[in-house]
Image (cartoon, rainbow, N blue to C red; front, top):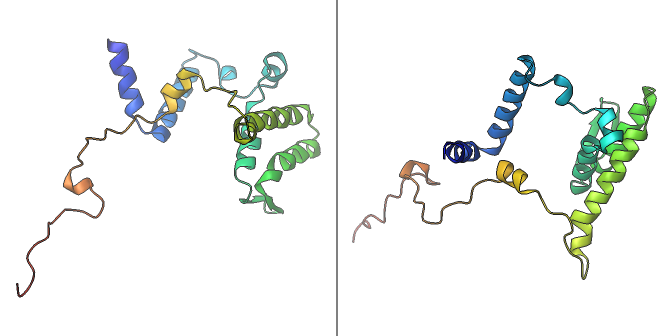
Length: 169
């Protein structure tokens, strides 16, 4: 019972505040050495052993979903958002890092983008990927109550003053 009420309270927090609070709790847990900082950040070892290429994959998916956004890289290079993963890969190359991680993330991002955004919109296409219910529980906003009547000060446009009386009538 207590778990359910705590879960409901957690889900009523707005998504940005919920993510910030979760990040603060995880950071505090790392400072108190309940978990290691190693478990909190993107780790190349996890990419190759456990196939986690999420960061660059998220960049790729975001860039494909926002093709008209103008980007600026260190004030030197202007480009459209779909080129962002490639610019980041080029920057990794300039720094002397391996681009394998970037290429793997771009490949995983492209597969995800195709399966989530392109394939379902094709004739006869279906949605193959399903969001895990735990992620829906954490990040989905609660359904709005259709019977909710907001207080007058919460209504758009302020108070409902009524129709009043016409002048001269």
